[in-house]
Image (cartoon, rainbow, N blue to C red):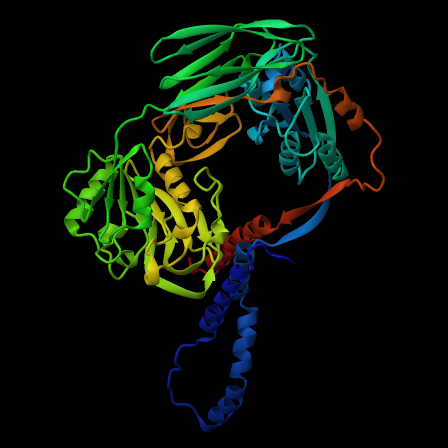
Length: 624
């Protein structure tokens, strides 16, 4: 019999004390007996051991208690039997395309209407966006109808194949139906028909439902921002999907200054024209097509130019001219102040970098830094000997997102791996870093590891202290003979610090303020953000709407910029035709699945019955 928790079988050892307890006998009473009786007792003494065992086995209380202990130990080990169960059709997974093209005319409302026709006894709903979003799982019909009424199309490109895979996972045990409702005009990832064939090969019933008709559209399909002579220039591309020439009126408005401008583009049928804007003002600029077409998601381009401020960065170090100091000083939007210690007031600094190599922070410095972080400050700690557990005070270690131990050496070097993809890690080749010395640390429970060694020693970690953000950077930046690694010699080094400073709240690159829909970013902690449709409290942001997001004090402009999604003249009939074609030869459809029938509940019921029986026996003996 297999067990889910075989280690619990160790509890069977509890029967040993029980047996010993029953074998124990009280000391015999010494009395005067005749010689003949003494001789008879000698014979009986030889049988005592066997008699004790016989009485032990015949004692019903012993047998009951022994069985109770055995059953409890077995129940804790979660025994089960494997059985073959027929696949069920009661569970229906509704996969609804929520991509930008579904905003065309009434496509999404038609999709919701068709989804209601497939609601069954048990239902799940998955929105096919750039990443699948499960909005309902295993609920009844009433909850399903209520959820369907709240759904809206987003502005991403749908990954239908991944959504089908997510649906397969929900039906992997009991089986069921997959209903995919889409316009099937474009998608990311694998061909949806391949996903359909795979799901059918596992015995699932899959149906593709087509919605939408072709429509006319004019949309902004591309937009780039670059710095030119100290100012920003925007170059956009507008495409006409009509079969006739269109004169497109465009209105440009800066929401900060209120300044407006307008231009017109004469665009031939199925062609594009460029739009260039120079000397963009700070804040949000909206480029609006004054065109009444079928798809609103690409009619407005949002441009965010960060409001440049004199950002003060405090760099604390006991060493001269470190590479990290040089890299930070090269960022034009940062005013770097280098000190040998932490001053009593940190309120004017947006970021504090602790780069001490030998001198641990004093108690008063730690208190100042703690107050700064608890009030929303941001700090970066660079690994060093001063941070090792033998040198750093406990109060200082409490501020770190990691728990430091000792400095380790690796003669053959260690390999670094990206644990979580973020914008900080983009374009950084960590596999090229030769690292021969590092601080051995463990991650704090509430912290997030972005980069680690092949042995899972955290290298780049962030977390929170109060309302503040702390970052541990485990790549020491000493140079020369004392160098721990060669990262400071790689061209990616200043890029890393530029990205990190921008992520921590600096202006960073203008590209960080202008994203495409479907982008995902991780926050330092769960916090409230403002989306184009309202407010949310999240630790991970999926930018799936066009418009302006307010995230961690930044105004982030998000745009569709996708030619295929904007092409509302496309139809998905070919996908439906391929989906309805005969199955490929060699596919073996399953009609049943392997289920685990757990026996622990039955064992607990038997235990309760035995306990009641034991009480009855004790009462009958007059011992209760």
